[in-house]
Length: 587
Image 1 (cartoon, one colour):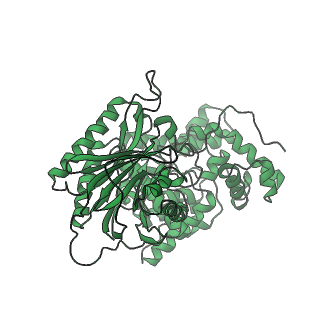
Image 2: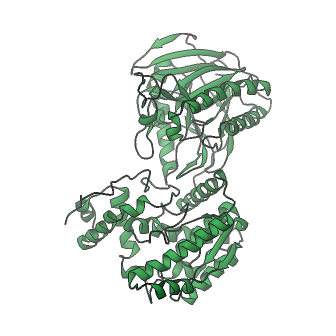
């Protein structure tokens, strides 16, 4: 049986940076060739970045992608890499956009992959299954392909597939079995969700069984607006054995030798098979480029990490790429001494380094001494740029000119803080980070243009109870490495409070978070109605109270900053509800 040395290039492209992404392909193809690879694989939409959203409708962008693919093939050959087959994702089109007046049935933009070899495009494949759930809108953008491309490389028949083709039974993987392939390549832009890595391996195993072939799954890493991609690339044998697995959240070259069956079928022909798909076979090479002599390449198997470690890495990478890809020099955030701002600051320091993080204490007459001390302590522990800007004189100036009371005065304090942070942003170029967690966002426990002000929220999709778990994990992780824990223990242990009025606690207006979060998770993430929540054991009066808060806060959420998605259903891209909406879950 032939042995094929695969190189899965788990890299971090940037949407719209076509030249930069092509440069990544050239650099990592060189690494793959130096490792003796005989087939190099890159992620979905590698040339354009993913997802490109409505850039699909710009014909200039489609043309740039197609032209870049041709240039890349020539450049790889000029680099001396022409004999290395390289699979790369790109944006193609064989007709006008589907939204245009001259759209043609069955033609339009394509989520595509190409196999580049010897200066040209040896084969192309158009994604068959188009996801249209959660964060995906691919039916809006792309036309489905109905042809499975099978390329013969070194005497092995290899089928090309893309992302969602793996997540649905039937279609390309079923046809791959009928075509008798030895390997199915699946290139991905698969966004991270907590515990998704636990789902991927069984899924890849199912598709390997369906295809009767080994599967090479390569995924990108990096942040793109709210999304973060975690890699977790892997190779699974036809019998379901996990052969190699890459780490999450880092660029990585996974090189592994895979023993595969010798191809027997005729090539350079088209076949009509089941599921409405055709097979197009192309010969790239019948004889493998010789691999280096020496030891067999073993990619290794990286074991999954604990949930808290996984989420922390996702939040750090999501923030880092949002800041760096959008070319912000630094970030600024308010440091209240509370747990949310402490966790956000620690994430920011891990993502960017302390020299690029400004933390501002914004005390009022209601700010406790322990909160001020905790903010200063965190600054010392992390080494960030720490400043103090008292807000009371500014609040007093408003109150001297306006007759305000009650909650209005509380909101005024939050808005003065927002004005100061935005002023520092304008003056010094920082990106303002807002620090409200998902529980607060769900029930509207924030002030518009106050504590909600900011350009990005690193903990937007993190429930309050998970915030505490993350803080404890991060401190314990620091202790294990002999470092100073970044988060003061008093910030973790004290009762949460906005400190906008004397003796104020979150529990004055909200259920305890241990009670609140399970209700919110059921309602927001699980789409349970009132009856389902009560059947789950929640108190009916508390359920009614919480659901009212969630339903009436949609207008606030619509105006909230983007933030890294880590859950199955994040506010924004995942959960889309009308603001004007009279439907209520009645008691």
